[in-house]
Length: 253
Ligand SMILES: C[S@@+](CC[C@H](N)C(=O)[O-])C[C@H]1O[C@@H](n2cnc3c(N)ncnc32)[C@H](O)[C@@H]1O
Image 1 (cartoon, protein in one colour):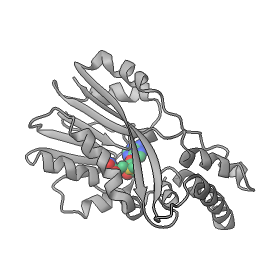
Image 2: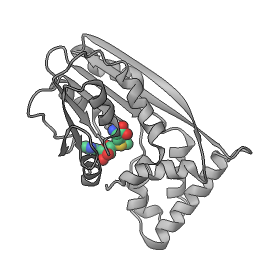
Image 3: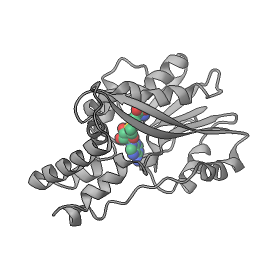
Image 4: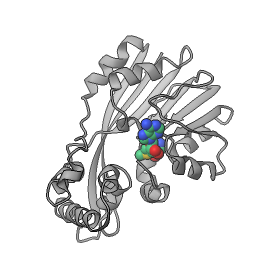
C-alpha cells in the first residue's frame, strides 16, 4: 500500500497528540537508542528527538515516500525503509516507540512479544493504536464497498477488528515488570469540507481506494463521502465533530 505524506499531515496536530500523550508516560530517563516503528513523515520521531537530544534515534517505515519526507526534515535521526513484521535492530534499543502503526500488522500475539524481546534490560516498549473500527468512519467503508459495481473488487479487504485492552495485557504481562494500558476517546473538532473523509482517505481508506481506478474509484469515494456527511454532519458553526478512540500501552521489561 502506498502512502501520501502530504495528505497524512493535513491533521498533523490531531494525529501527533496521541504520540505526545504516549511519550509522556514513557519512564526512560536517558536512553542511548530509540526506535520509532512506523515513523511516517517523522512527526512522532520529532517528539522523541526533542525529549532525548543525546539518544541515537532511528525512524523505521515500510513506505519509501514516508521515509523520503522524514529524511527531508532537519531531524537528527537515522531513517530506514523496513517492514516492522521482519525488522530487527542492528543494536538493541532502550526504547521502542510506535504511534499509530502497529494496527496495520497482523498477529499481535506473536508480533508484540517479538518486538519487546529486542529491548535492552529495563527497556520500554510504548505503542498507540486507533481503536475506532466500530465507529461510522470505518464501518461505512465496508457499507460503501458493498454498495456498487465495485463490490467484488473490494470484497477481499478484511474487516478490521481490534482485540480488547485485556488481550494486550495478557500478551505482554509475562514479559513486563510494569505495564500501563489505557484508552482515550478524543473529540476532534475538524474544520473545512468533508473533513472526516479527508482524514480517513489519508489512512484507513487507502486499501479500498487503491484497489479501484477510474469511474469505479470515483463512484466508491462519492458513496462513502455521502455516507460520512450524514454520519458526521457539519454544524452551524462550520465545525465537524469526530469522536476517535485510541489504545495506549507502555510496557517496561
Ligand atoms: C498513521 S501513520 C503514523 C505515522 C507517525 N508514527 C505518527 O505518529 O503520526 C502509519 C505509518 O505506519 C507505516 N506502516 C504501516 N505498516 C507498516 C509496516 N508493516 N512496517 C513499517 N511501517 C508500516 C505506514 O507507512 C505509515 O507511515
